[in-house]
Length: 127
Image (cartoon, rainbow, N blue to C red; front, side, top):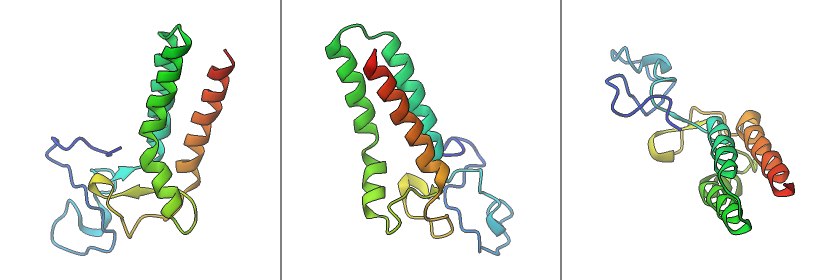
């Protein structure tokens, strides 16, 4: 999830902490919150999507479709975990999920927020 909407005039999606230029908006990593895509909010988004989707689903087929939708949206995270030497999720990425060399290569709250999603899903599956 981008930290700033691409239509915003301050949107700068490529975080390069070591940049030492005359561009005030990106020099020395000032754009940390102006466009790079952070992983951890994805967990909160998917938890909310699952919760509100399940509130309006009544049949088993509808509930299965809700779980399938979440599973499809997790595909990028699953690929990242498989390809990571740490088997984890990064702190952030550049625009469109490009690798960010100045990001922490694995971060606990990126994975932790998805663990919360799986806990919620387990609870909904019991209902």
